[in-house]
Length: 215
Length: 215
DNA sequence: AATTCGTTGTTGCATTTGCAACATCTTTAA
DNA sequence: TTAAAGATGTTGCAAATGCAACAACGAATT
Image 1 (tube, each protein chain N blue to C red):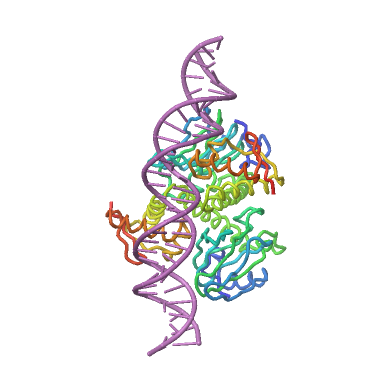
Image 2 (cartoon, rainbow over the protein chains, first blue to last red):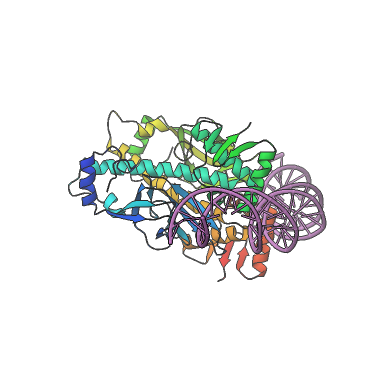
């Protein structure tokens, strides 16, 4: 279990991490691409740390449409309890993007008042604050994208945010075309159609996952 | 300036609140319905506390469509810096829902290490954590609603979340029909059309702002 | 090398949605 | 009280989108 580079344990020395993982009774599991790590409709009061690979938090509706709610890269955190309201969770799953390893910790371990009141523990709590803040920013970005009324606007809004983030008119998409459609919550074929038009109109250039905004 | 009931100052005694407001150099302003409190495209590194009334964080697009991103009730907090990424903010405003009063504090006042290192200050930081967590939950709920593909699904999803929150099949909408359309990011007339169908099909009952789920 | 599985591109067609325009009703302001 | 402004309900029409189906391509597996 190597959590040295994870956001939750940032600033904590390796040996301390090991000690805390034991104290927290952390467990590690391995997954392969497509595996479902957990189902948010169940009571999930643990947090998961992605120690290798990347995962998506997805929602499936009655018609089989998949929407990506969050895309979580290596070292990121997932967990229902600190992001989704108790009543939500129906149809929401954490799914592996590729082969993954995740470390699980019961959430009360984080919030509990440690009998040994160690300094590292308060560091973890402080890191947790940063993670939640960062998640809010990602959720709000996503919300801004989905608030757009047309597929074209959703795409441009999404591209502009990525472009601003990378500080370049040209950038790599963090996921496949299929996943992009699931992220902006539109039909994949309709999205492809729109992307084609945008390329023809000279608004964007596209090469595999590389996008360039031309204005 | 009365912030005693606000989420940011929860658990802090009245006299302490007054002292902190002075220390933080807080300023109070009054607004009337429809007033724009601030524009997130500008560098806004303050937080605003709604001490009376309620506000919406809205986004307007090039075509004049308005989307409600957040609905903030009395005692709630708004502020770009802790929710939206630096690159976002284009076209985003905080607008008064009705006559409002807001107290403003520069954000560094919250995060600074107080020379007097008071206990209350750490209480405010702790409250801030709760507020950000709560905001995440609201953002994620909203995201789940917007991830639905059709107007009907958006409405039902929104209604189910409200119903679960109030623990009743029957509940009051927190905003007008026009605002509901702006919250679910669809055309108002199309939404009305869909609501009519749903009433005819016996899926819901509706009376002004009161909704009842019939299944 | 062959096969399977998943991703991407494409298109016709039906449906949904947005838009515009207007009538009615309600609330606010003069 | 009246006028004005805003909210709600309604509808026809055009445009956007979803859906289904299939072909082409590529990666992974046997």
